[in-house]
Every structure is written in C-alpha cells, then in structure tokens.
Image (cartoon, rainbow, N blue to C red; front, side):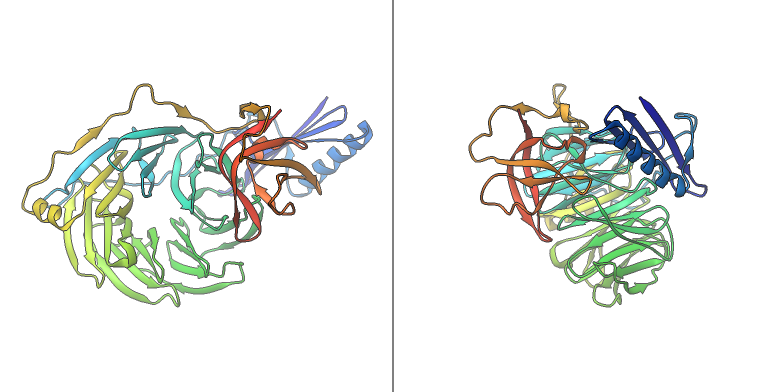
Length: 477
C-alpha cells in the first residue's frame, strides 16, 4: 500500500485543503477536504494493479499542477472558522416584551426556522433542537460543528455548519446533503428548489446544484456577506457594500444598491428584500430594480429582521437587546426589551415572534396587539423556562455506510434506489416503477457505494429534473 498526502494552503484566507491518494492492490482511495478535518473519501477499483497505479498518478499530477505540494499530515493546523463578532448591551426600552416561554440551548444561537407545528433552533455548539409551538422539546440533533443558519426548502430543513457542510435534517438520520468548497467560510445560505446559494466571509456568492456540483461563483463589492436569499427570479446577496441581485443562472448582476451601513441580515417577501444594517436601519428594497422603498430606523445596529406575511409589519432586533415592530410605511409601533440578549435571527408566525439570541435562547414572544399593549403598560406573563429531558435521544449524521440500518426487504410503499457509476462519479437512480429512471436522486454522498441499493420512504420530484428523498434511508441487504 502506498499513500501520497498533499496540501494547498494560501495566505489571506484562501484555500486551506488537503488531498490524499492511497493505492492498495486494485483499489484507489482519495480522501480530501479542509485541513484539520477527516474530509470525505471516494474509492474506485480497477481491473489491474497497473491501471490503479496509473489512475493514482494522474490524480496526483493534476493536483500538483494546481499548486498542491507534499506535506506531513497534522503539521499544519486547521484554519480558524470565522465566528460572527457580536456584542450585546442591555436594552434601553422601558418595557420588556411579553415572553411566553424560553429555551436555553447552552450556546449562542444563530439558526431558527418556524413551521406550522415545530420550531427549530441551532447553536454554535452544533446542537439543533426541535420544539413544538408550545415550547416542548421533541428532538435533538448533534452536528460536527457550529450551526450558522437553518433554512427550509418546502418539506426539507437544512443546517449550514462551520465545517463547510450543509446537513439535511428532514429525517431522524441527518446527513450531509452539500459539501461546499473547502475554501468557503460559510456566513449564510439559502436553498431554492434544491439549488444551494452560499454567502461567505470573503464576500463571494457560490451556487451549488442538487448533486453537490459547483455551478457558478461571483465576488461582491464588499466582504462579510451575511445575507443571501433566493427565488425563481434572482439571488439577492448583501455584504459590507450593499445588496445586489444576480441572475439565477449566473448570467450577471441585475442591480446593486448601496445600503446605509454594512448588511448584517437579510429577509425576503414576494416583491421585496429587507436588509438590516450596522447603521441602525432596516431598508426595504424592491426586488425588481433595487430601489429603496422604505426605511425602518432603530436605535442600535440591526442584527436581525423579519416580517409578517406580505410585509404588513416589519420586525427588527438590535445589538442592545431590543426588539422593534414597524408599520409597512416605516412608522415605529413599539420597542421592547428581549429580556435575554440580542436577537441574532427571528421569525414571525401566527401572532408569535420567535427569537434566537446571543445568550443561546429560543424565545417565544406574544406579538398580539393585546399582549403588546399590556407589556407597554408594564404587564407581562411569567415566562416559562423550558427544560431539556435527560433521556432525550440525540441524532448524529451518517458519515459512513455502516451507520445506515440494514433491512432484508423493502416495506410496502417504500421506494428502492441504486448507486450506479457514471463517468467516474457515483450517482443514485430509482429502481422502483413509476419514476423516471434517468433522473438522479439527491442522496448523501458519504453513504454511496457503487452497486448498493437503498430503501427510502418517498421521493418527490423537484424543478430541474431530480428527486429528493423524504423520510428515513435504509440499506437493502
């Protein structure tokens, strides 16, 4: 067995990655990823040892020509991941928001998603919790690194993490659905119809398709891009210099609008995007041409913002532990203290405003008119502190095929898929009838093995001609 280990590390926040090739008899294993991580492995088998050696030599030569050089594994440390530098001062508001319940996750929390029946929160320790709308904890996921954000795409929930991966949390067995380029330091992401859009530290927008393949990338005018939102018409990106809209196919910039301060958060409605800035404002920009339609003025830097459906009300959280509500035209309706840190993300649903804060709490605020009026007069409910059950199961990502449950037969109604080799890449196609066998299936790369068959609960077609897995994944014996 022979192993060749290479690294490419550039100054100034550029590439910091490794590439390792191992030849053992007829097999060639390639392991690659960010320096300081285990990376991911691909394995190929060849008819003769000579062909295996030739394939390995070709791979090594390609990397050397790109600047990789021989190195000693472990000699170069992992590059520190950028954590959002935030400060949180006490609120200057005279009254406190009517908090119904609070769940302390144990670490600063950035990610939030609220759906009809559940709330999701992800923190810097890599924990993701789901709670019902009354605040009862239902499940816990443990991911390998800090959670930057949580986003949804129809039925699917994704967590963007500091290890450069995006995890699908839609079933009890989470898996890495996307592995972003090793030199990308995720700040924020969005997913639209299976296409991933990533904004990063260097001020770059990267777009990756459902097969985890790079589509296009474009640099912005600034850096520290904390905003990316996408729809069928454009990708909306915000950094230290403003907000830009890009054509979905990467064909070019559609418009750019300078904002009053660096963009620290973004939100979107059907016809407008909202940018929270470091200069105490939320600015509403028309999606069509980038025109500033309204400004919502706060008293400190805006860390997060959200709207009620259609933008009738606009909410904002600042660096001084306050939360605001504005009318659509920019009129400030109220300002209240959060009672526990500054809101780093937020979402409104059904007269409730959900916040995740610098002290690591998921907070549910009663945003009904009656509750806010009472709070302004000094009357608030006693907030319930939600406790985590000691026996709560913890779900960790599947990183190898061995982590997947093996079954002898496909249950009634389940769908069978198969890993096939196509031009040197392992794709996943449908075996069961009633589906288009030429379409690929979005499937965790870490558990793909050529020739292996898997059972999934359901498949859903997506725009672009591919299927997405819904429910649990099991391997057929």
